[in-house]
Structures are given as C-alpha cells and as structure tokens.
Image (tube, rainbow, N blue to C red; front, side):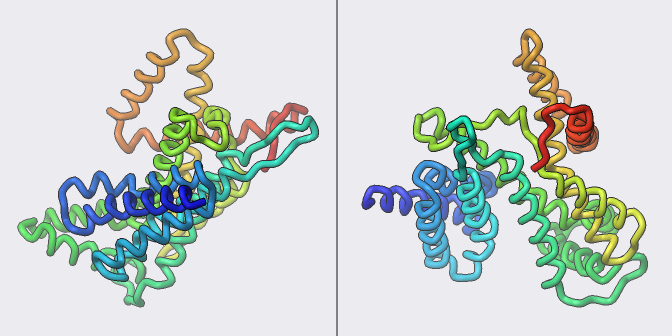
Length: 317
C-alpha cells in the first residue's frame, strides 16, 4: 500500500512539473505540458483509480503551492479530470457467458471524453460575460472576438490592422471547437500512450485494445446530426455554439476513419509502408485532411446499421 502511494505521489509531482514549465514561461513548457496527463494516466491504468486520484490531488497541491490556487483549476480540467475518467472507464470489465473477461470498449471511453468536451463548451458559454451583439456576430462570438483581439494586442502588438482582422477572422468562427478539440486530442493521445507504454513494460492491467476495431456509441451520431442541422440553420449564439459542437463531435469520427484505414491496410502486404504513405499524405494535407477522414468514419459508422439490418454482427452500444 505504501509503495502504491509513493508511486502515485511521484507521478503527481512529475505531472505538476510538466505543467509548471508552461506556467513559468519556459519555451519547452508548451510541448511538455501537453503530456502532463501521461504520468497520471499511467499510474492509474497500472495501480487503479485511487492511485490516479492521489496522484491528481498531489499534482494540484504542488501547482497551487508554486503558482497559487487559480492555476490549479485549469490544470485540473486539462490533466486531472480526463485522467480520472479514462482510468475509471478503461478498467471496467465483466465476465461474459463464456467465462472470459470483456473490457470496457475504447469507443465508449472516447464517447465519455467527447461528452466531457461538449460539456466544457456549454459551461464556457454559460460562464461567458454578457456582451451585446456586434454586426453579424452574436454576443458570445463578439466576446470571443474581443478576447482574441486583446490577447493579440499583448502578444503581437506590431501587427497591422489588416493582419489583426485576418487573424481574428481565422480564430473566431470555431474558437470554442479549437480549444476543446485540442483538449480532447491531448486526452486521447495521452491515454493511448499510457496504455502502450505500460504494455511495453508489462505493467498494464487490461490488454491493449485493437483500435482498428473501434466502434462509437450511437449518441455521437445523433449529436453530430443535430448540431450540424442547428449550426446550418440558426444564427447568433445558438448557431455559433452548435457549429463548435459539431466540429468537436467530428473528432471521434475522424479517429473512426483512421481505424478503417488501419483495418484495410492490415489485410494488405507491406501494411506498414502503406500506412506510412497514408499518414504522409494526411500530414501534407494538414487540417484539410480532417474532413475526408471524418467522412470515412461516418461511412463506417453507418455501415453498422446496414450490417444489423442484414442480420450481421453489428452491435449497438
């Protein structure tokens, strides 16, 4: 027991250090802060939820002791909260009728993380200060534009008015989606990395899932259709928030598209080379690759219902 607490405390202190490098303004902190959840997830997936909770509380206490209490809140949201959710859900299991263990599917863990991200958007909208609409912008969108403008004045005061307006035009339309999408991507990358590292070390509790068999919960498709419809038809704050919700909800479908690519390549000779070429093309295409890959994920998602209708083995979660 003492050893578990010691390992949890060490993981928490390491996580807080990775975050504090950013809080203290070190250049390398931007990169290292992205993996701040990794020690928490590793100790949790190895030792269990209590160890992850102890590590998270220790990390929050360390952050509060060094830079004050307020920075511990964003640390809790970005590192501790997703770590606890991943650990709790990923370690759930049950015995099936054959007497073998069934572990909680990774698609449902992804659904939990996506739902948390959508909740963060709604909480942020609720907490945003009221601001009158400005031109074609609703109140929330006008507030986001003002906030980004003030930030640019501090970080890039030499920009011309035209450059400033261009930058704001790029950032404002999907700013909530970009922030929460980054949070979701960070949680996913750290969760997969934590499980992979533990498996290599032989310290994993659950076997590593076959990610290419990924299946998403049906509610994600319902939310995507609803948010896309509202975002296309509504204006003002409602349409603005709905469009960000739709973009964030597309992220799991993009991962489903990648899973389909991996499954297709696995049945081909030189699978690794094929995947390397695919990822090279996606990298060169940059953010534009997100749309067709998510489209492929949607096709795979809908194919489940066709298999079910044909009497196949499609499952609904």
